Length: 292
Length: 334
Image (cartoon, each protein chain N blue to C red):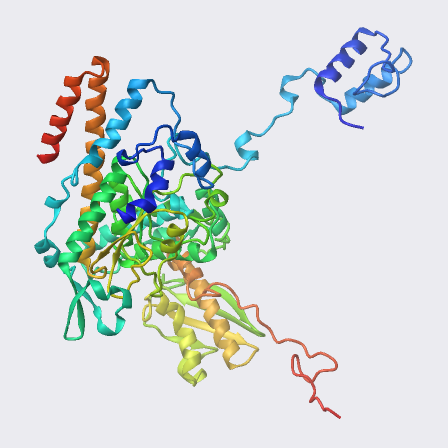
């Protein structure tokens, strides 16, 4: 839960109240904690039952470990077939990537796919939860070979991409660059952590400064330190990058679809009132829908 | 004094029209002028007739104002919705219109590369002759965004790459959006009408100059590529290969090497200047045998000058205090 603790203030600022906190009225106190340039979440005057439904909507996914059924999306075999386990040469190895490396064959590092599977499941689960809560997801990469693919992926998800020259104060000085009430991304996904001169991308550091959680595919020559959910894997081969793009696209679409279904469900529930049987039905229906 | 507004004038003229006496000393604001009375009324009438010749009530003489869109520059509306989510998927790059344009162009490029054969035959597109690419300011105005020179060059390079592939009508329409016609560029040069000699062979005459050499060339329509200069074959008149290449160039450019006969006279200048003068004369004479498009192509050919522009370079004069036009006297330290 350690990475989750760092993203808590951010989620709380978005008006989300995770179940395990049990805070009574966090609203006004948290408003003051908001960082500059963050637009307040839409303050709609909701009646009591709407508020109740809203909190149920947001708490229900957090009660299960794999609400969006991420495990079925990929296996170690698919990662192996997409050449995700291939790293760079041993001379390019970054010191902090050593725990993730399985071994070295003919001077080429091989990434441990068991760890990759675990990290990728966590990362995709987190992305799905952020998308479920209507967060802004930004895909960042500076590899010119995959610029077009990543921008297409982002557009098909309905999210945002930044695969071009990263201007200096984009995240740290956003109110000046964009406007006073701009909303920053709630999650940044790095498909390539390094920029064109093989240095860490500026957005990694800036996201950490602005308390924005990051998911990043780290190769053997990358620095996984500041990334919230690192995913050790190959970021240079086309099949690997295509696989990751596809996985992120499927998760985000699935999460948004699930959100629409839940909202439709609760809207049907609403006119009938908060009946006990109604809530029981929804939980069973939700279980059946997510297991399907 | 500030110009009177229409409404005040109306009131004034109306009162004048009625011949009423008005006392302006009491009114505050606009008018601090002389009081109008029966003695000054005709003078005021004359003044009004002078200033507003069509009278004060003529509808067609009313001031016309420009549309607000022409006065106020286009600005960007707010880029995100109520929930804070931006509308455009490239919003966080900063230059969303420019990068989305690059994205679309690159997408078209990939599509063409995928569908076309890898070694296409070179197809000449003559529709580029009378047009030029957008300049940076025009592109900035189109996208409502500031661009840097490198961004602009990158975009133009992408478009040029798109041109090298075989494209269909959709891509052609896309490219035409970024071309502007250059109408004034084609100076209306008088194309000599063809003249016919005794055997019925068409020929055309024109002059050319270079430095101090003057040449006149007569180009015949049909022939075997023989050139006579001042009655002497060009092989003997220009023993240097470079001069003969200069003569050959206009024909070579139009792929008409062995097809025309030329007889020319030249005087003045030196060896190279005479060659250049004859070349210009021949190119101008050839204009009557070729199509309009080819004329344009000749004019743009071999930049920076082109084949149909006379070379303006002449010998620079020697200046006093210097040994030559640019060379200074030897500088001695002591």
